[in-house]
Image (cartoon, rainbow, N blue to C red):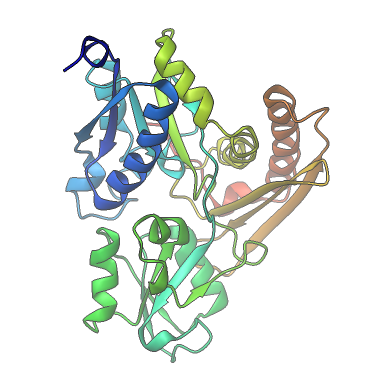
Length: 323
């Protein structure tokens, strides 16, 4: 080994050990290491959400995938951790900060059904697997004649339920399918305008300690950060925070920037899908800078939350305690 190679910094990147988590972490870690001119070490961490097969609601929902990763980061076992942003609690952590939000992948939900069927084509009584209260409510609203089955497990496990005939279909995030090379399993992708997804779905979050990052790590974080994605997911997550609803609550939100405007639409569902409330607003950032986009995100989210709460959203998605 040359002296130069021996002196290269090493960035330890924490992640869950699932196939999807490892795939998405490896992809972003390679970019991080290249931009930082550093070597990368992947540190796998087991979370409560990985070991429990109970429903997300019964084991706490918010934070069950994030807590162990955060503990490892605080303990100094890694320098940065990679989360699926939709799993990250909305409240700020006193010891941690959001170091980067890479460009978002496909935020849509996907149906993976037998025989290439769409949701409309599935027969009455079809069994559709999902562990998401939001997706259960949306399915009940769209097809009250189908049966939502609470399932847990990785993507291959869930697709296996369909392949083995135990379920007629499963609902999954299109981004996860793409990152695992299983995009061809989707038989239908739902437009965000009709089927809003979880705040932050399709995006990743790189979290670091509050202390000043090393020069190499900060250079890597700056390189992978995507300011438009950071602003749009901030707007979506502020809806959850404003409603005091957990990440497993039946809330869908979609934000995007177009024609110099930041648009945000959010929908709150009753658990059985029979009722829903929607609010849409737009804000005009003074510029495309991170600060101005963040200000616009806060402005538009505040107006959407005020609309929803004023129309009774708290009765549809009861507040959840923060972990």
